[in-house]
Structures are given as C-alpha cells and as structure tokens.
Length: 432
Image 1 (cartoon, rainbow, N blue to C red):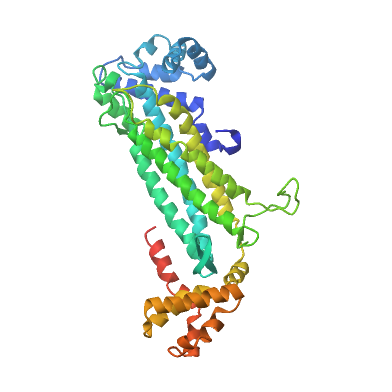
Image 2 (tube, helix red, strand yellow):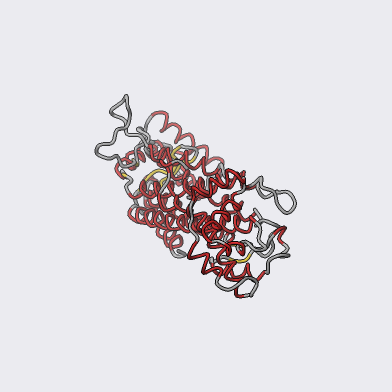
C-alpha cells in the first residue's frame, strides 16, 4: 500500500524486518521443541538466538542468486550463527514457515482492525444518542418516504459495525493456525509435537490437517470479511455524500480553517473524505475474488496463491485500517444540521403522512383500494400545486364525512413516527 494510505502500526507488520523476525521465531520455537525431544543437541536455540541477526539487505542479496526466499533467509542466519544453523528447519518445509508467518501477520493486523472498529463504534454510538430524536426525513429510492430520526439512521450503522466486529473476531480465530508438518503434510520428517510447541509459543492453534500448506478457505473467509467491512464503510460514506449535497445539506464533513475545496472554485466544500472512503472500499473488495480463487490449488501445494497474498495481505489490511480510522474521524467531527433536516421535512407539505391517513380511512369503513386512491390523488395534488396535504385532505368531503376535521388534524403528528424510537435503541444497545 502506498504511503498516503498507510499508518505506521499496521504497516510495520508487513515490513520485511518483521516478517523475517517472525520466521526466526518459528525456527527458534521448532528448535526448542526438538531440543526438548532430544532430536537436536541442547543449546542450539540459545546459540542461534544470541547470534542471529536479521539483515534484510543481505537476505535479498542471497535471494537474488538462489531464487528462494526461505533458503536465502536460512543462509543469512547461518552466516552469523555458524555450525549450529544446520539444525534449523530440520524436517520442515518452506510453507511451514511462510504459512504460519502469514497467518500470524493476518492475526496481528486483524487485532489492530478490531481496535479501530471499537473506536468507530464509540463515535457512532455517541452521535446516535445525541441525535436520538433529531427528526429527519427517511428516504426510499432517494425519495422522501416517512419521518425518522438521525439518531436512528446512525444506529443502523452502529449495529452493522457490531456485526462486522463479530465477523472479524471469528475470522481472526479461523486464520490463527500454525502448520509445522513438513513436505506434503505427513509429518514424515518432523514430529507433530514440534508443531504443537510452536503453535503454543506463537499463541496459535494447530492446523488439524495441512497438505503442504494451510488450507486457503481460512484466508478466503478473512479477506471476505474485510470486503464486507469495506462495504459497510462505503454505505456510511455514501449516506454522508448524499446528505451533504447542496440542495440537501443535512450533514457536512468538517472543513478545516485553511482547507481548500477546489483549485478553480473557492466556494466549494466537497465531501472528499467520504468519496475517498468509497474508493478505498472498492480497492479492499478487490482482494476478495483472488482470495476465493486461491482455495483451488493443485494437489498438496502449488504457489499460484503466493504472489496474490504478498499483495493483498498488506494492501487490504493497511487500506482497511486507514479507512476505519478516517471514517471514525469523519463521524466524530461531522457537522449535523437539525434545522435543515426540519426544513427538508417541510418541502413536501406533509405528504409523508399519507400512510397515516390511508390507515385511518380503512379503519372507518373504506376499502383499501378506495382509500388508497383518495389519499394518492390528494398527495399528488398537494405535490403538484405545492399546497398543504392536510388542507387538501380536509377539503375532501368523501373523507370528512367519515372522519371529523379535528381528528384528521391529529393524524399529522411527528410524534406518531418517533413513539417507538426508545424501544429500538434499547434493544439495539442491550447486547453490546
């Protein structure tokens, strides 16, 4: 991932130095286990640990000649350690190191993403509670539907990210496995107890059965989860972008004092952060299909998945980390305009009370079909003439013969639409 969208903590997980450090931890843990089992001489792991140094430049130099990253790594370690290095990697295969390391990197990245989701949840909850009863129009197909509250709108995102948190926790658990099973996964040259020791040391679970690799359905679940979270981010960002349009302007991204909106038009204040989040979501989702395609490898192992994972591992996790942090910043600092929300509620002259009138008509004896026709004609008339829907309804004698005018007026009440907001909040927040 380019520097523009990379944050230090998660980026460091994917740097070569950290990767090779994990490789060394895996090799050292395996050596410790073999020492305890008297497979290799005692003191090897201690000697290796004291002398081994991660020299990224040197490893890459060797790899350029031997064309094999794990061999290059082991050779560089041997240059520092000496004869005891011959006991490293005993009975193991490259994938034991590569796959266990990759899973650990995904686990580490996932734990950072969980922290960012928690921050976002706190920000959404705070705003949702603040605007619990802030009236605004609900829209379906982009068209005014019925009143809701901005707090309730935010609460839908809160619940969605709670689900995302659970999905990610499950995916982290799914990916947190270790395989030290040797060529084609038969343990022919390495005792399964070594795998158990390494797994415990690295706080991973053992992979119940690996071929020569850890099965890629685990990784597909992880990256699919990242894609779902990215889509949730985009849904939120899209809502903000629509609500910031000039003719709507119910919310607005914060605009810093020295910020510029356009090189040509000084008046512009654009929703650039939300637009950026939409773009990042597309990028993150692009890792999902390759991760699914990585499941179908040849026989016990091929490396068609390798180049894919070297790219999508860092790119998807780093981009999502950045996106979650940016969305949290947007939510925390969002400019919210309740007065404009009320103004927008009024622009249709109350036609969103149509269902309330419809239901009342059916309750006093009108068939649904007749009631619908009466209400629809009245609503369309009010919209076309820019007239009060209530005034048109009360002027219709077919309606007033059945329902008194004073009763009709009581139907046009915002409180009717907010009477169960507390129930929704209570049940949405009780299972945190």
